[in-house]
Image 1 (cartoon, one colour):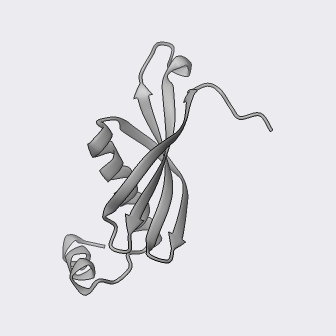
Image 2 (cartoon, helix red, strand yellow):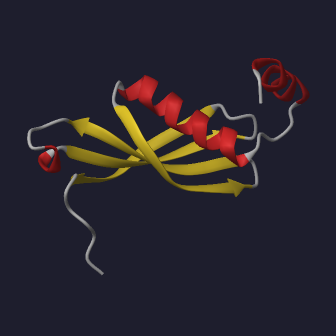
Length: 99
């Protein structure tokens, strides 16, 4: 999708596609937090837009396995504009969840 297609989608009020939702969630959160996004771990369509979980590098340390990561839940409208976000978890980069 090029910029022209993107602008036409906004003007028409159409829902953006999932790849664009992922990209916008990551980019807008990074701009607000001034932290580097690393991945989008979940994206879901909702009745009025999109929700996504974005993994962000909050504090870089050496060795990098000690860096602090955070997971943020992000809400976007149907056109991909950020409506809100919430940090749901912080963890050391080298850690995995135990089930």
